[in-house]
Image 1 (tube, rainbow, N blue to C red):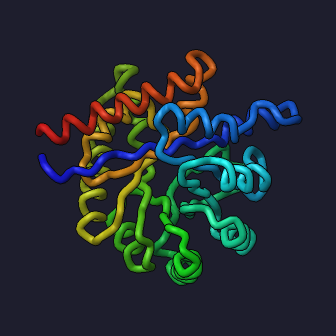
Image 2: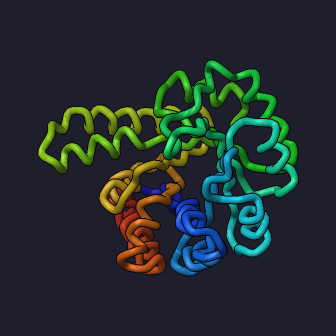
Length: 258
């Protein structure tokens, strides 16, 4: 199938900082992880600066912006503090995500439809500053249409429910839920593209799920973190990113020959 764009890989380095912060000090350094990931084939780096600074810290964001040779994507809550940091740091992109202090990771997508007024103002302010804005949402037609309505040029589809369902299939459970979640992603990505949105995806992806989702031509970027950092303990970050890059490329090829 001609005209299918290349698929970008964004590597999230948050959990390198999680390990560092568990003991304090400077090791391991998320900047070094970012540089290794780029050398291994990453197209960009993602980092989530949370309100409580549980992993990535302000200085990490400043160093990443200054010292990496690829785009920096700042994940952030929709708060005045985070908007001010984004405008000061000027990353290539920001991804607006929901955030609760007690959650271990981002547990769901933004409810754009319910907070369109606040989000529209933030999207406008960041866009006018020259920062590309995406919103992290479920593959729900209501949320996708709301994202287009607030002027966000990009959505990132939350793939966590699908990845969780795939994990159940591997344990011998029914494939029904995984198939339903997959259809939501396929249909959601197609709807978003028809509305003129650029489509990214992320959360819970591993080698197998990344290969599958890479075959969707409407998705142009995957953002992956926890799995890569976890596997790096066993195989090294360079090798893990290279493998992820390869499985994504393999999945993309399957889309082009279909």
